[in-house]
Image 1 (spheres, rainbow, N blue to C red):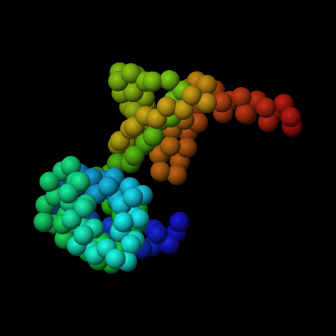
Image 2 (cartoon, rainbow, N blue to C red):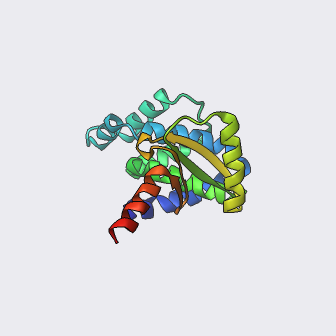
Image 3 (cartoon, rainbow, N blue to C red):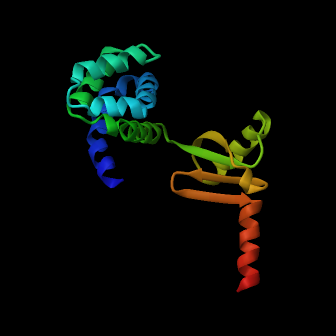
Length: 176
């Protein structure tokens, strides 16, 4: 969805510049607003022409589970008044990328067929940080269809060491 990314970019960059003094605090409320904005009922409510921007703002502030500083409220008002609530998840994603770039880190998703305990995850994270040559924010998602092993996604890079991938490689080699 390139159009949504194009719409979100100036908002994310402006937010990043405005929140430069405390990016970690901003990341907390940006993520909270992101989760709220993903709600389909809220999106439908905000798309209703009879509903005012103030009403949408009040609903979001009312359900937010974190205290929103004045900067967050001003940002939210701007997004709502410009009818860009649907772009808020993309704005949050781009803000997160900018924040990671500044800190020299990246997000890494480790897909595993089985749960990984914290000690093993720490070992995997250390190995991956050496492999990708940067600090990684590692999260784990279960994918039983991998059968075994792990699949790691860091940005647009994929490291697939799963049993499923190896079986696919064997299948291709045998059928060639």
